Image 1 (cartoon, rainbow, N blue to C red):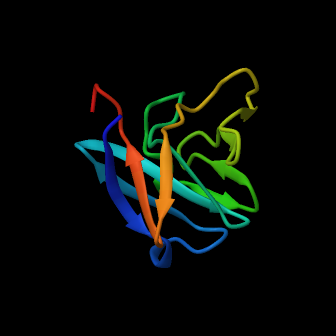
Image 2: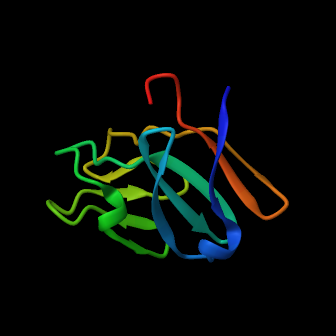
Image 3: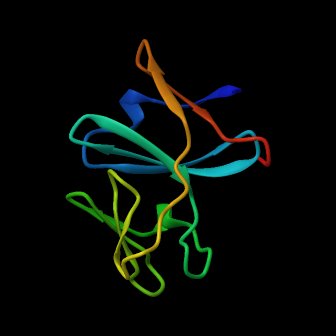
Length: 104
């Protein structure tokens, strides 16, 4: 695994999302109740960046066609049966590091 710095915890408060580029790949970071999650920043429907959508509580909604995901699990809520691609991450000394994968 190759972890790269994605952001600082100071840039991602609880209840917020942030789109960043890590090793050439668009990554969506979300802080849900103090826990940080990382996903490939792309809706499973039309491939649009989910970082441009809306995060309310723990529900992430795509701006284009309003597909919805559970931010903590990446599971589709509307429609169900879909899944965001999660990325490994670690937090060290207030910094967020993400492994964007081999195909980044």
